[in-house]
Length: 366
Image (tube, rainbow, N blue to C red; front, side, top):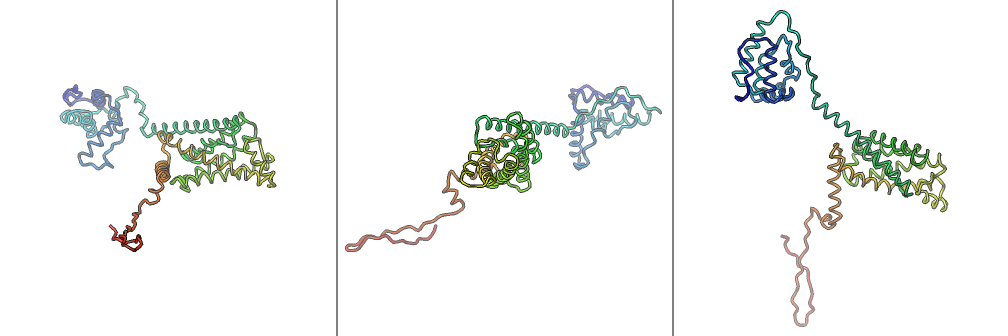
């Protein structure tokens, strides 16, 4: 670059002066980061025939070329640094020659460090990992908030649903089963302040739901298609019903005052044993609750994937759209991929004294 000030003059000088001249080049080029210099050198080497696996120098090696107090510097690397920072071939060659001259005439004792080394910048991968961890934590907190909101609405309005596991399902599917367990346990701990001490006992229901949602999605691949996703929510409903029924019968004599227990009383009045009445009521209401939760979760995952990668979402959402189109156009869905053909009907002309009729006439298919 001809418009930059020359940072190299003459062939004399020590390694410290060469390092200072390299810093001048770096600042004249726009305070280029060391990581960017590494990238430029790798690209320069690849253009000159070096394979990509060996073209990238270590970032610390490049950084050391700019540091004072060195007793040995790679002349070829110094020339490459100068070239990628905009120096001409002549200037790069002069810097290489100065490195050789400084090696031949360096003092017996190394020069002291004139300034402390600046802290190395955090690698891009480390920053990305920290950002991902922060987003996951924010999602877990939001999921706890969704559970508490549903829990409060049901308790306040007396609804015959539960609706306290939406966040559990989102976390289990998007982040894994144990993230869902953390959300579920946090929800029931907070629920102590909303209802009564029975909330903490039913934390086991939230845990079971999180494990079935999480492992069902990741190990059993039940989020690949829409029918499988519906089956996953049915399995969650049945699993939660078994655990909830056991807790209700053993610890609470069949009920805790939830609105859904009206069905339990009706079944008991019809002569069903307590355990059967509780299980039947729980299954009915849990199926409705978990299927509704599944649809809410499916919508929420579309927003979550803008921040965090959600496994299976693309495949699942595409299959849902196919099923919606099939419902909207049942004829097209039923005959997709098949070519229908009907034989034309030939009408015979009526003759005097004869009866007009219609006879099928087989024609060659097109």
